[in-house]
Image (tube, rainbow, N blue to C red; front, side):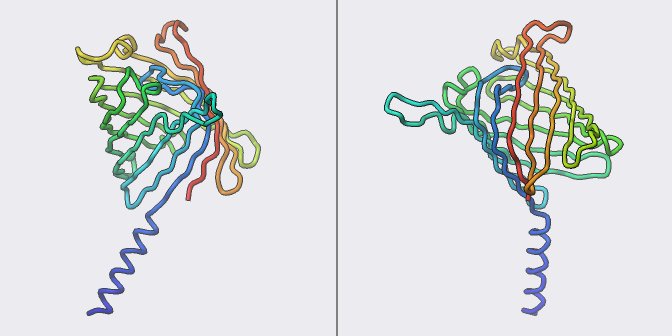
Amino acid sequence: MKKLLYITIVAVLTNVACAASGSIDVGFKSKLIDQGTVTGVNFITASAGVEVAGFGLNADTYNTFEMSDAGARKGMFKRVDVTASYNFTSALADLTFGAVYRNASKTAAFNNVRDNVLPFAKLHGNAFKVLPWDVTLTNDTKNRTNNIEGNLKFPLPVGVKNLKLVPSVGLGFNDPGTTTVAALKNVNKYGVGGVGATYTVFSGEFYANGYVHRPDLSNNRGQVTSYDAGYRIKF
């Protein structure tokens, strides 16, 4: 009986280990954009995540480096987003449920909201196995609004080993409540166009992305450009 129990425990732990994965990402982001609105500029980012049997836990940190008169470094952890989620998989698409706990200093907060909890549901897949897509519904509990955003990517062959080029388009809508903040009331819908490149090396990949954000789809009034770059590794 003890031997059977031991074999069962080893088998369970082996299956869990095989189902586990993780990631580390370090980079730079020129603009931080939430729900179609710019909420910060020039962040050094560091992220780490783990997923075990569909359960995910991820931490994203946004840091600024400024020198004080005394030469001391300040600006670490201006904002930290902690995401807990569970992913349901299927042959057609995956469905992820979770919530983001957001903690920010006053200089990196969205409308002075220092902490917030944002439940979300994300449907994502790969159309025809060549077009990655996702649709995410987020509830902003403190700013009293719902947000839905969809994105579609178009990976292109470039003929260079380990190099990928990926244009993308996205569309988002804010469904503001009567007590929401002005920044979200004024951005009922927005569009995002971008292009990214990745180069695989050292068991990870370097990446660079450029984006154009438009709060008005009919013209370029309020148009914002942004970029990010860094290195990530998955294991």
